[in-house]
Image 1 (cartoon, rainbow, N blue to C red):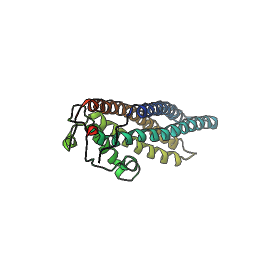
Image 2: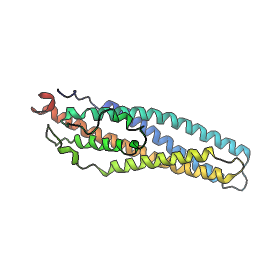
Image 3: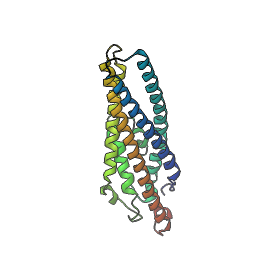
Image 4: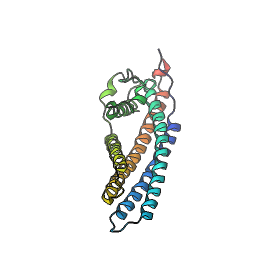
Length: 229
C-alpha cells in the first residue's frame, strides 16, 4: 500500500504562527497588567474603585486571552496533525504512534505530559532533507534541537502556573489584600512564561515546517522516492 501523498504545511503553519503571536502579545499585556495589579495591592490604601477597575481590566484581558488560546490550540493541532501524517510520504515507516495521538495526546491525562513532545521529536527526525528517500528505522535515534526541549518545558510550566493562578483567583478573600497580591503575582509569572512559550512554539513551527518542506522538495526530484514506487 502506497503512503498518502504529501500535503504542504506552509498554509497551516502561517495560521498557527499568527495565532501563537497573538497569544504571546496578549500574555505579555496580561503580565504587565498583573504587575500593575500587584503594585496596587502593595499600597496601604486601596479603594473599592481601584479594585473594580483592576478586576474589569484583568477580566477583559483574561477573556481575550482565553479566546485566542482556544483558536491557537485548534490551529496548532491542525498543523501538528498534518506534519505527522506527512511522514510516511517522506519515507518514514513504520511510525511509532498512531495518527490519532496527534489530537488525543494533548488531552489524555498523564500522556499529555510527554506524548506530544515525543511526536514533535519524530516529526523533526523524519523530516531530515539529507536522509535517504527510504529511511526505514534510521531516523528513530536522530538528534532533536534543544529548542524543542525548552518549548516543551515552558509549555508544561506555563500550564502548571495557570492552574495555580486560577485556584488563587478563585480563592481570593475580598477582605484580604494579601490574597489579591498573591493571585496577581502568580498570574504575572504565568503570563510571562506563557508568552515566552508561545514565542518558542512559533520557532518550532517555523523550523519544522521549513525542514519538512525541504525534504518534500528533494524527494520530488528523487527517482526512488516513496511516492514514485
